[in-house]
Image (tube, rainbow, N blue to C red; front, side, top):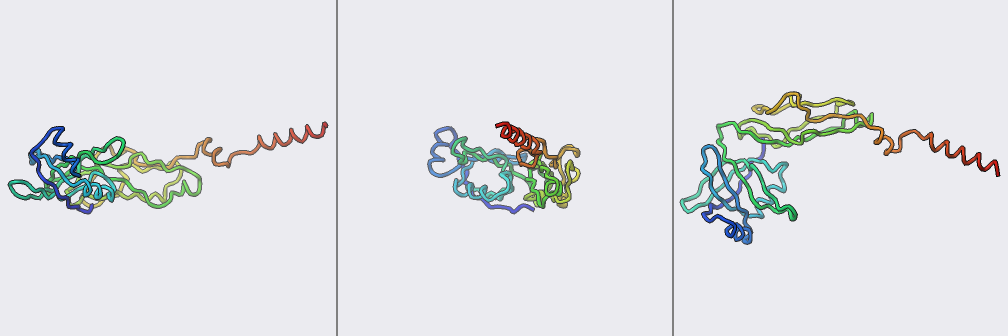
Length: 219
């Protein structure tokens, strides 16, 4: 199960470009929370806090407990970080979307795929481990949401592949999508890769040396 993080936020009534500029200038990040049973609400949260949380997360799409302070009182919402908008140059966070979820209702989220071990096809035969999907979409209750999906690739030989149907998922978690979709595979080394590694044939060099020797005899 993914570690549940607490985040503090404040409801905000002011909207518009000027309001957003003031929020960011004050070290805050504008945000919004919405959901099937949650009316859209504009929020703001500390830039340093959300940046620190995301810096230590395996994925930006994670489950959080959002503590919201407003004029009408404080409330707590279980929410999924749906999307994060970053500045294209500086990389700092510009906006966050939260999707409110219910503890007793199944949710959809993308979970990072992480490999462990060294493939026999890579270690012994010089193959290449290629990850086709860096994350997969899953369905589960919030309490069962995993932080990552771990795949042991140790037994994979050349041209072996792992598909969605082959993944071992935690109890209560199922994948969404075509069961035959490839998550990762071990490919054979190409001719270019062999040449680049210096392990290719050395015949051309031998021929050049032979011609050089023949030329020397004629002098």
